[in-house]
Amino acid sequence: MQEFINTLYTEDNLFILTGLNSNLVDLIYLDPPFNSKRIYSAPIGSKAAGSSFKDMWTWEDVNVAYLNTLAENYPALTDFIAATGVMHSKAMAAYLTYMAQRIIEMHRVLKDTGCLYLHCDPTASHYLKVVLDEIFGKDNFRNEIIWHYKTTLKASSSHLGRDHDVILCYAKSNLHQIHPDRTDYPASENTLKRWGKYADTEGFVSNKHFAGSSSTIIDTSDDEKGFNINYGIPRDVWYIPHLTGSSKEKTGYPTQKPLALLHRIIKASSNEGDIVLDPFCGCATTCVAAQQLGRKWIGIDIEKQAADILVERLSDDAGLFKNFVHTAIIPQRTDIQKVEPTKSVKERLYKEQNGLCNACGTAFDIWNLEIDHIRPRSKGGGDCYENYQLLCSHCNKMKSANPMESLRLKIETRKKLLKEKITFGE
Picture 1 (cartoon, rainbow, N blue to C red):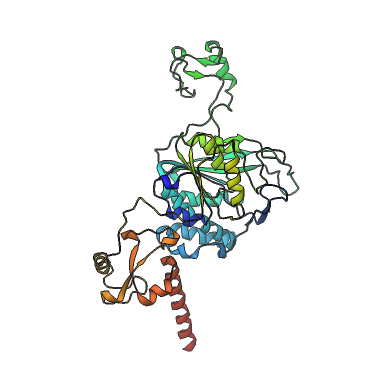
Picture 2 (cartoon, rainbow, N blue to C red):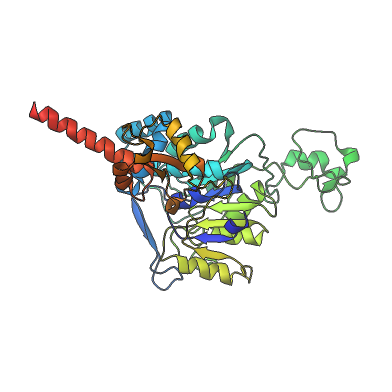
């Protein structure tokens, strides 16, 4: 596990996620593009100058090599995405496919006690919630958190002023427990009136006066004091100021989020020593916040030009980052048993595949079939039995160093073209 920790990866996060162990991380925060039809660029003169990303989607942005896996394992989700393409746009369908492919892998690497926070805006939040319902299970939805901030955007004759984002919170199972920061939630007047006469100078009421009200939060850190009347039950609307150009933590990176927001999320759903993953880490706010709070972290971002900004910020932040790794090498899972492609492995595969090529379905003698990786090692696939298959020489050459789904797509395309030619000929 140590090889994954405090590592910044510069690569497509789908490939990095595929190479991470299952049940590895305790908390995932992601702030992906929202399909807002905009291009974000950092201003000249800022630390992030030259960094930008396109937040408008086409099917060229989707890794088609993984589409079959999505269709086979999540048919209902595939139907929903197809319907979205009709109801909304092809761009939204492409965006949801892109996100679904990655959320599936995030669900796998998350511990059963873990939690995921997906940051989005009203452009796609309602569509992404359906995707999360299908992958995580609708019963594991915990909260739709509203991050409220003040902006200079004003209302118009067509819409009200917009100054909030949405953060969807999902647990992997009922084993996850949220322990939010209570310091920003003042208690109600009724609570103050009811318990104020029992409170000490710090606002705590001792357990001998506590009547067991289910609406009162107990401070478990001190059994003698009981609970603090100054703090109320945390809510799902958070007011945290947006970063301004004068902010000390501002890097100029497009869509940078404040450390205070990440501090609250990390405190709510992780403990010291836990592992926090951000697969769209941008200027590394999540990584910095995790390190400040005594957590371990994994960051991924595909933008190579932004890598220097990430490394600079990780290195300079209060001297916290003395030991971390920055790499573009795709990790290899260590939680699966490594198996060499021996003769006995080939014989076992031959029997399970009934002597057929796993791509074209043609029957061959065993010596005419070759052992191949279903998902290439260069794309996070490991040397394990589950990742082996037998292909004929022709199919193996067609597949090359791509995932198996890309070969199936080629075969289906050829079948379709052949059928069209036959029909046209008739």
